[in-house]
Length: 148
Image 1 (cartoon, rainbow, N blue to C red):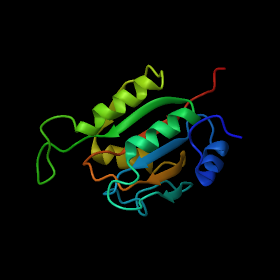
Image 2 (cartoon, helix red, strand yellow; image 1 turned 45 degrees about the vertical axis):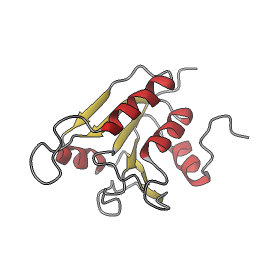
Image 3 (cartoon, rainbow, N blue to C red; image 1 turned 135 degrees about the vertical axis):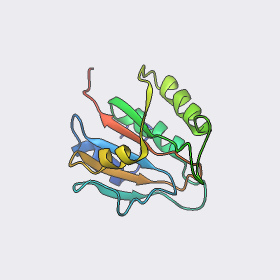
Image 4 (tube, rainbow, N blue to C red; image 1 turned 45 degrees about the horizontal axis):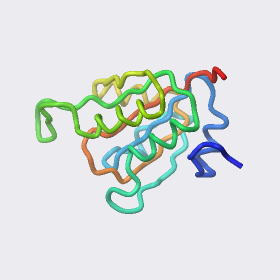
């Protein structure tokens, strides 16, 4: 019987095998999950219909189940058709989830193309594709070390 809130069997299997420095990507509905992943990454699709499941919900479940040492978002574009002038609203949701999980880490943005490179490493073990429609909602977790 699991004590954390994450109950998806395949996700639990993958994170159960993940170790220190493993990368877990929570991808929004716009992320090219089938082509932008590391060579060892498995893809779990949770995109039922627009907005269901959201990146925020997945982040909350993951933080209940695995220690993290870094939380990175994909930096938003400031020019072009998808440009934003300030942090995406979803980032405030992430900050609230992180705080509620009792984690003192800061959300750190990585420039978009560097984010793709960070995901393409052999340490990337899992992508959870959501149906989140918010722009720049991708979040990359780096697994930490259990301290208790």
